[in-house]
Amino acid sequence: EELRRLRSMGLTPIPKFNFSCAHNAWMQEYGNMVGTQVYEDFCADIIRETIEIFDKPEFFHLGLNDENADYQKYYPVKIVRSAPEKTQAALRLFAVCLEQGVRPWIWADVKTIEEFGGKKKFQENIPKEVLISNRCRMGVRRVEGEEMPGTALYHELDEWGYEQVPTCHRWNWKYNVKETLRYCKEYVSDEGIRGYMISSWLLTVPDYYYGLLFDADLFCEAKELIYPEEM
Image 1: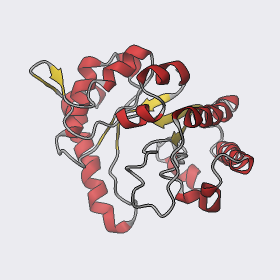
Image 2 (image 1 turned 60 degrees about the vertical axis):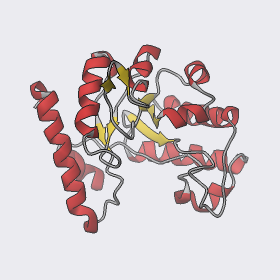
Image 3 (image 1 turned 90 degrees about the vertical axis):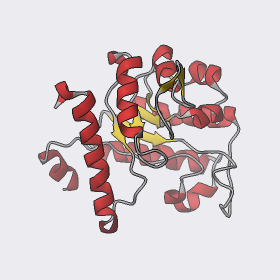
Image 4 (image 1 turned 90 degrees about the horizontal axis):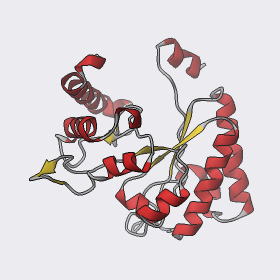
């Protein structure tokens, strides 16, 4: 019923779970079974079931970010897979999506790429069918001809042959939204951009209604300024 309501509004619902060990509290007891066959079966089953419920969406966002000790330093239980193990687990998730005719979608900022073994291993192991969302947490611009930290990954992913949905936000830097769209329009090929997204880092509950609305307004303002032809 909810999917029909959203589609009647002209929206395209895309399912998202996060299969990173840093963001899997939603799995409850299965989150403590990483590396077991029970865990693998759970992941495959819930992806297939969700794809069926969503009537084969174009994409399935699998998350897979922040799986490192620093992000989990306050967790009561910390699980950090080695790069080869995380890569193999991700490939199994991708395969479940692709066999259903659905493209996998993941977060892949600088830290996440390191968790997959670095840039070379990422290019070697992550299929080009996977849609990528990089998030540069600070400024997204060139200063005296050089990129700010994390910025270069946008055009590197483009050079490697991945399609992207660059993701902006105002968490660390209020101009990040406009800078992300402006930078990617200039330095990433048109074919490499499937769209943009803003990540609010706010709960989608009534208490945060105005914060979410403010982010939507920021995103719309940036799009009007940098992509007026799309409005």
